[in-house]
Length: 404
Ligand code: PMT
Image (cartoon, rainbow, N blue to C red; front, side, top):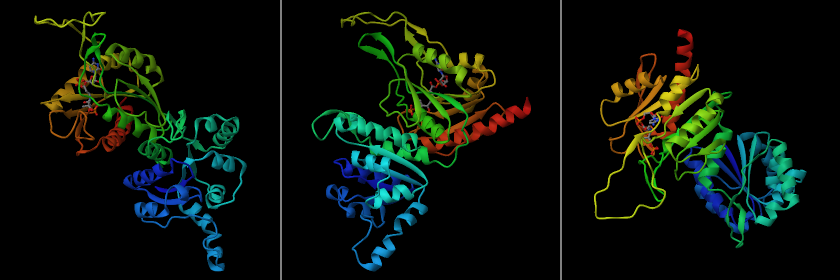
């Protein structure tokens, strides 16, 4: 992806360096354009070193006749050569200029000349953000098709607390990848995804859970959103940011996850059950904190509802993808779970293998298919695995339709 990164003159401009790096890490080329005031906060050299490209800082260069002539068309060239224009931070001043079509410098001129996707990440003092003028400008820009990444809430550099903070650069980069992704082959699908662990209460301060971080399920959700799907992510307690373009339903226990899944089932065309749902819950959680005593203690556990099996009984013609976390007999256990729970595909992973599975950024999975096939995928990032799962799921659905 070819990204233009416009940087406005706000205190968050320093985070734009991290953003440039996040784009480079995702394989993008990055053309940085600094406004004059951004150049007061952070030097062009920083961006030039990070992106290996000359940074554009003004409309007319040094003012020599030659430079004026070549730079007077440079904004057109930059506009034509790139896929997305990201402005981070977008100051209140830039929002106002973009909204009213003012073009006093390179970035604002480029904005008018650019016909691709425009993604604005405003960051400013809370009162400036809440001001009616700013909100009007944001609404006008959104109505024109500009993507607005709203600011985070928190303690701002000016000492106030509230909305105004530039979101995490890695999150912005992921959002830009999602918006700018050229492949929209999941457009029209509604994909219901479960992720993370569940927590089953013992008493108000203790619970039973497992090591799931949610990374696998969140990667699946991000991949689906990138490829154009409406995504409903039902997540147990995890420490991950909500992926851009994904509807998040936060749950805690297996019972809550079951209700959320069944409540959204009618919307879904594809269901992916990657959550590590507790198989047991405490029969009678204590209403008050249990006191420590020297005596041995035991907990009475009841099985939780098997959500995958319940979805399997009610799935109709939806495509159902389950997971299997195994420590041995990967394929036979994957196949058994697929048959008993009426899934169309099971993504089986050997969670005892060093470096993959729970908590890792990579996974190594085997796809067990209703059509009889078994596909072993190479070790890859969870995001790459997620894309492979959807590639095979789409082919599988075609094969299943052809059979019926
Ligand atoms: O979250 P990460 O740290 O990224 O780790 C990823 C992962 C290891 C959790 C993931 O790759 C994975 O294997 N998820 C499934 C974990 C699991 O619970 O597997 P299982 O074999 O116990 O369950 C089989 C299937 O039944 C799963 O689709 C599970 O969601 C589902 N299930 C299980 C129990 C239950 N009560 N209801 C269910 O729906």
